Length: 298
Image (cartoon, rainbow, N blue to C red; front, side):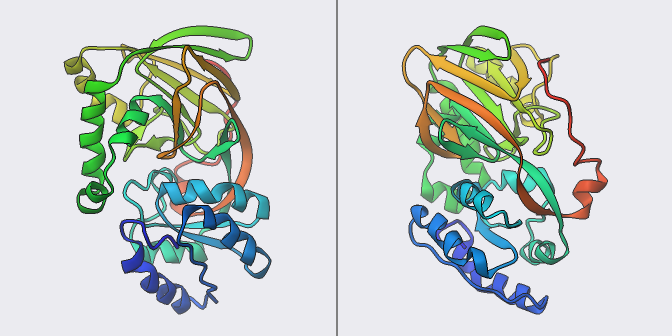
């Protein structure tokens, strides 16, 4: 449980009580620093049947490698600001319903993304999303929630400089001029924006989009479409898909992975199919999710 997340401290005891009401024996792991997440998971891995993570997408990102290595199923209590991972899997944001999903949820295999030696669940981005992350204020996240992301995006759109990137995948190489390259394992990032209209966490592929430089007014007009997820009909966006991408830039650039800046270009992005088992609600499977798509390039 990340008690430093936006809702963490207020909801920690409530979550334990809800789980106890469902006859779950709870061993409560705690951490004060982000780097302690992995050691807490390793400490209790042999004593539990499921790892329940309370926090936001950043907490899940930091825990993903350790969870994968345990081979245990993961359940999520979405206590962060954006909760894009939970949004993708239809995991309830209501705390009691999320606790019920720990017990009633179905074990489902999902993919994990890897960028250099860093792992990501949702999306890894270069350019616009990095600038927005740099503008992020912890105070704004606490008091304004996802509205804080929106103001960051508007400021970042105004200030992000175009860059040149070489993208290699399969037997192709593309030279791109961009203000944002996003490589998605899941569908949502940045508080509800989508990397692709049909991206999924269990399709065995990565989805990449590049946003061409545009005047500010044009980029703002594109935001509704970017929120839903770009498609091939959208002007100013280039879309690709595959199992691995190599991205090189003229100068080394920071990469935002699930809201955390942890690595830089040049970078190799890979998908690790079915690397994690997650408790998902039946509603997610009822919508036809879970069938694996064949990767390739559009």
